[in-house]
Length: 489
Image (cartoon, rainbow, N blue to C red; front, side):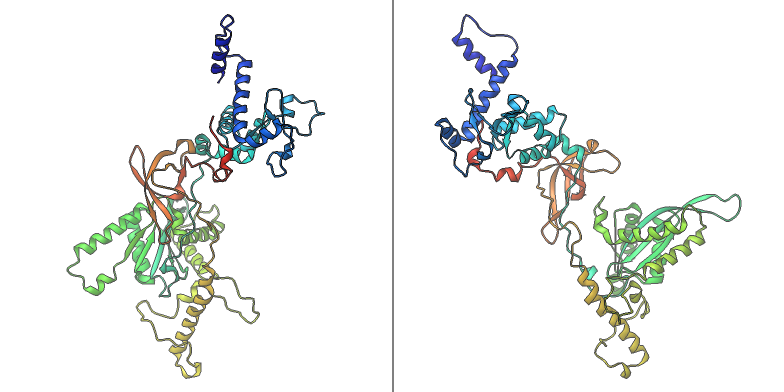
């Protein structure tokens, strides 16, 4: 615009032409010319009324600023600071509408010039010379849509909390559907006395998805063979589960591959019944611990007691086995749901109630809730007590699972083709890989929580909580502004 004004001036004054770099006066004059065009597009009605020296309408959006037209034909804020010793531009800043393209360019320029200032500082800097209508919304939108600021913040997506799977809410035997995870390392000594050497051991946790019953095992290392032996010990004590859920750890994947290979090679010798009893492994996506929140919470509870008891001491392998068993008993005695307020209710529902009353290969018994207790035999009375716990679990515990404690709304608005950053714990946000979404995987409720991202290295499958969107559409609040006040210079 400054060069255009100079060109016009040189055509009018051929004997006194301007040349060289642009001066400050030329740049200021160009800026005022652009502001005049923007005001005539955004405040066309108010501008005409003030030019005719008439009173603005009471519903005008700039009436509270007492606007007037100065000698340069610009709309300025009248305000209440006339008696102050500030500069003229600060007392009477130029009026602009935040929906206009010129105002958006000005905010982007000041945001970068002030080293990516935040919304508050950006708005304060702009108001030194220009008063933007709805400027706070535009300041927030400018900072939010800045790619560099978004990379540094590294805010990932938060989809709405998903619905509970059937394994969490359908009554069945304990440990039929199991989640597993590893924790540690814990440092132990190889023997007592002098010359003992420090070693590592790990905690392997099995948790029943229905009743939150826990089973803790000590593991010497994180190898596939160690986990398979741990799984054998668990099955021998708790019975064979129908399915196991775990994260994508290499030891779990290796155990699943070896078991499936054994099933394939021995398929001829297996009967139809044993084929139906094979353990099915289900793996969550990589880098998504929130997909297994129930066993992650179990690990947290177990480590809470273990760390407070162990402290900095180093136990032997037998001692840490005993400690894990005691912690398991404590966690299996915790209440499953809030206690009743009735003073006559002395018994709370715990995971331990579902671990007694049947052998590992027992069959479900007939319903006995409505039978009279004196008419039942001893075994039937025990079965009635066990079924009473199941009934309380359905009435008390299942109702507590209705509430979403977090991720109550779907804040993950992602589409195929969006540019995203892949979050990595070991790297700062500026070093995260950039990729483009190629596919979304919606859940049963239609909300996607996993996506395929194509990068320069390859295609990765990641949960949405590990993706940080780089570019968004324009701010929805600014979209809802009056479109008639917009325009492009």
